[in-house]
Length: 277
Length: 313
Image (cartoon, rainbow over all chains, first blue to last red; front, side, top):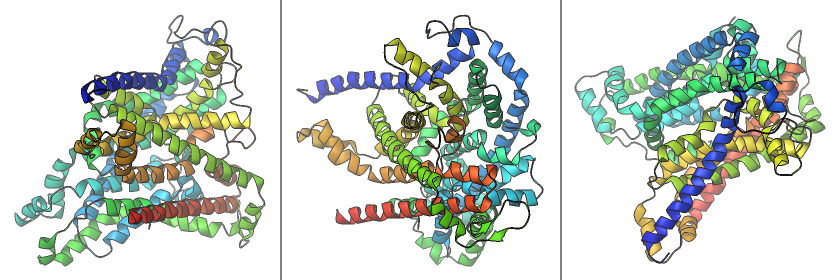
């Protein structure tokens, strides 16, 4: 390290090696799931350890779809996640906009109240929540999964932080041109919030697609099960069919990875600008 | 006031709109604001705050969900005081939070620092580190059960392949908690990394350059410049991490079911088991109330300490 330049280069190679090694550790469990999903059960559990599939086969996927109606589970999960995401993102954006850009008495109190709901462990209030949903006659319907989680504090927090960065002058100008509240929101605020919307879409889709405990309680009819419930069932009933389990586990992750890959570029900008720092 | 709220309130500029204050129709603005907030407030009120209030109320009763409930006052809480499983799950939750949060933050910061310079394949590497965070708790647990299986799991097979004995990940208490922590850290590093990466964009390069011309080495730069500048981010991540850790459910429920014995039972999984399996809803509500209060107090304390340190500087 005689000059900053060579010091930087030494650091670069050291850093690259460490990053790649770390990445391999991060990827290995997923790689092993993949190997398992394409293997047949016998070669996995006996014989010498091999780190790649001996005779790649799709048998595990065929088996899993035969054991439980996973096709149905995927449709259910997709329907719930998409509707819930659209609803949550809309509500998040509205609340974030109001909390960032309107001045009114009680604004700070409302913001703190909303944030404080983050501290409520959802499983802890599930008994009264369930009674409430049951009282509304929503058990075994998608609404029981979608509506109670539609308002979501973390998304509102992100929206507020991001929208604080939108200049007041821009909104003021639109107002002077005679635009109403929703009009300003729709045609000025939303177009400026694309990276934010990317973050919200990714995170909300992820939360809803991955959600487990609450759907497990309110959905009893197997034809309504979501993918995580189906997986937990598969685990419970065919816990040693590792290829089938890993196959379904990986398959259930693909939609999120796809959504993330699609929005990835905007995601980082959105995180940076929404005050997550 | 919650710490997360405080962070948000104080670390970011609040909008100053002198123009709007002078404008006529401020009353109409307030009306519109409340109107636009109503759907959110209604949903929070009905589906979260009402059940929270009901949980406090229910914790004073003995109830199975069927038939009449019986008022027991502080009975549930007094029973909890002598309940070994409750104390064990409280200890487990504290251990889990106390290890996963700092470890995933330090690793996340390390990865972020290493990635905060031009590097070929940076986008791909970033995605790799972030990937486990987007995977569902159920998938993580199902995979974890397999990877850490004592007989056929890859971890033990690799250990045996290099001549080491396998570890009793599933049948012994400490290894089971270790596996749970390892799996959780695997999922959380990427999130800390992304947030720290975003925060590092705000650390002026001149600070680092000035420091290195003054002869400060990289470790000193890191300790005395970068880490203090990242403090608000760290506060945010710690608060969020602790809240998340106290709410950990899916992974534990599917990975260990709280076992072996109650070695990995958490406050929330215990509350769930009491409420929905044992159908002791009042008792479960009491566990829930205490969990909620602990999180509330912890975040408040952390926040006050943080404030005091900032004031001292």
